[in-house]
Image (cartoon, rainbow, N blue to C red; front, side, top):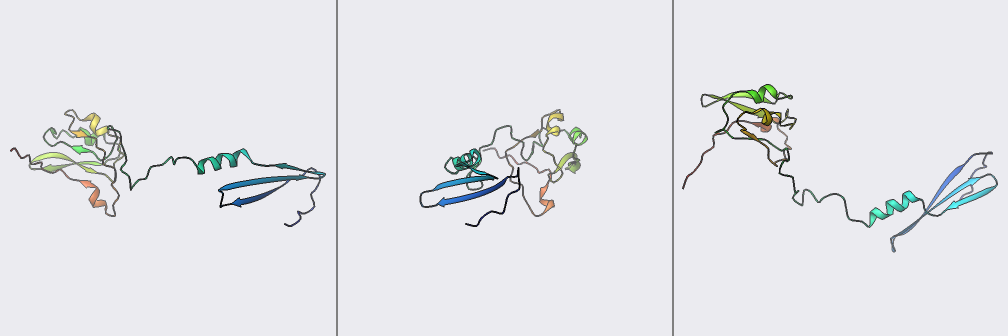
Length: 162
């Protein structure tokens, strides 16, 4: 170990010495604060005690994407449109703060088309819909390399009655 340089009056120099005993998983941190005329040594800093406690505790994060996330029922994921309930009034388009909704022609009726790349997921559209035709979902994995795939065009729903 090298000798520290000469210390001026009323000045402090902080030297940190770290000893790792990896085979026992013990970390010892020693601080030496040198002042002219003496040395004060503190064994383990409270901050390092806190950090070391996290090494042996349960992780705070989940194992996503390997484990499925448990989302709340009112989670604001990709919106769902019920075409049977939609009357084509356009209030959703009018109230959308991100301009993510465009009214398009769908079999002779105006229906909303959602652009998820512009959507803020605030669900103002669902709140302003008089027929409650827009619903939330827990679909959140929307990453893509094509913005065109983020445009939700109205689709005709076929119901099979058995």
